[in-house]
Image (cartoon, rainbow, N blue to C red):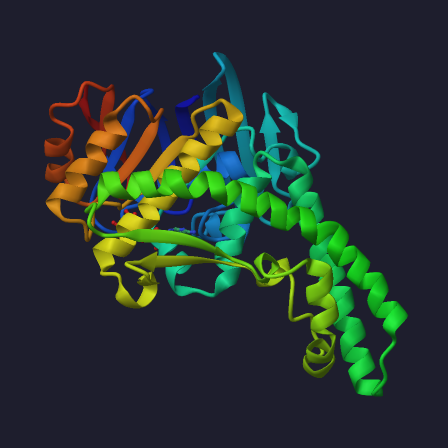
Length: 370
Ligand SMILES: Nc1ncnc2c1ncn2[C@@H]1O[C@H](COP(=O)(O)OP(=O)(O)OP(=O)(O)O)[C@@H](O)[C@H]1O
């Protein structure tokens, strides 16, 4: 699958843009703040119906303008798919495929698989477990349709159980049969979530490991570890055992909503013991593994967007990454970098179709084509 062209009007700092891409590597180079990432974000919009960075659509309209338009033509299974996203202040966002409006945006998500590697991914290292669960849930939901459904129902059941625990705490009573009703729901929806995560991570972790070894230094032993209390005992037993604790805390202290994915280097937390380059290599390997996984499950190569990935990486890692990306294993790739010379040198000898665009505040010019 690849994006053939992109048309933008009043999207973030782009007044207007009309770009044609190759089914190979497309690079955006230019100074800081000129709008390279904004171009990637517009492509992300066409796949996910929203921005990677800013969920408030109105803030993605160019300052002092009233609307934005993003249009792109994708070649998907050798068929042209025209995707339109338009948003006018005060109106509902419009999202169309081949001129036909979608009733629900969720019907579109997954149609155009895409993986974004961004400096913002560091939140996966630094933030709490929720962002890592979201990452895992996001990948699984793209190929397992009942997973998201179970997750929504599970989360609802946790909220209801928490509300009950709080009420009982305030009233200083314990209503075992009401708690049992919510326990049954947690079990019904939580158990398949746990099993899907375990199955997914069993397959995903070795792919991640392989990528890290290709990019980084093989002597740096890194690992991804799935942490769940459900490894220790059955969910049913855990819920029973934690009742006194839940009653005191007035919320549900055990379950898949507490799972985490630990990032480790040489057995220590990556957050505390990994250098910036190691952390970056770790996150890139994670996203490339996501790419492989989606390709395997969907049978389509996702678009790969690499935002500012070379910064903080040493020469060997940059080279390893570039030979990886220019292999035909990946499909269409978009790369941004502030260093034009670095990009030109890096891609000098590759035999993949290439276009380099120089991004300036008011225009985007094609400067190299191979
Ligand atoms: N709604 C908007 N209207 C106009 N300009 C905006 C809007 N939202 C963001 N911008 C501008 O877009 C610019 C940032 O663009 P972007 O993040 O794409 O830069 P970049 O070229 O990727 O920079 P870097 O090399 O620093 O990563 C900023 O100057 C910001 O003020």
